[in-house]
Length: 283
Image 1 (tube, rainbow, N blue to C red):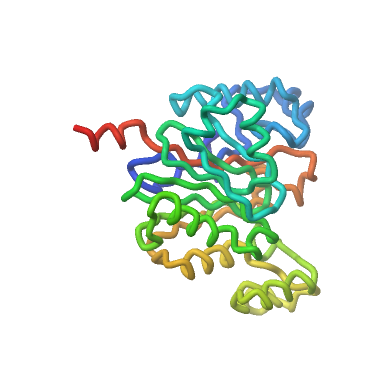
Image 2 (cartoon, one colour):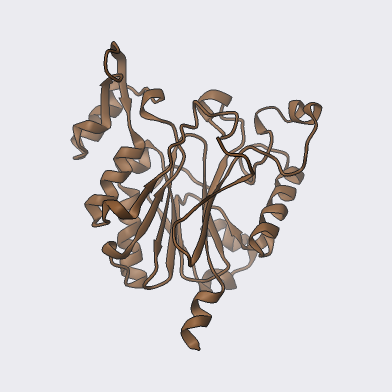
């Protein structure tokens, strides 16, 4: 279990990659935590119903840890699409309203600009981080079952290739905390959609581990499904890190919509490119 607000990943030395946990850095009292309910205790997602002043305080703390301004923390308003947005110079020149509009109904972000923190929010869905150390390009992907079925991870890899020249063989990936297959019961129609979309049968579970009875309904392994997509895209398995966290079972430390309800906080899984990366190339 995590012991701090941020869970860091060794994605690459040129970036910081992390997920937020529910653990607050502010030393909140039991009474304060109880008052916050399912939003306790650390949430930076602004559109999930949390108190906006509390969200802003959390963002300011996170920005301080990253050494950036709060305005450089980017998070799309996700709606389970396969749309991808790029945080580039043109985006940064927009006024705040236009920036926010361009991030609506977007489920993946990518950038090549240092010190811009790009991330996605989840509470059982799977976050995926990508980094291309050759072209210094990063991406963050929100992959729920709909996005996974639409192959949003594959489409993000292709978008990075088109925009930055990224080769899949050069990518490093993190498949972040999400609901485990054992906890993720789905309907037969969802299971069928995955099999018809070309996913291996191993992503749909019909029974538990050895000596356990069959499930009454199929279970879906979203982490395995996204690992399949990453490998299918050309990323070597040795370059893929899978975080062994089930948000449903570890909801004391990570937000889980299935355990806490939709009106709860979200995990923010993000990547930020070091400010020294491009500077080193000009020396």
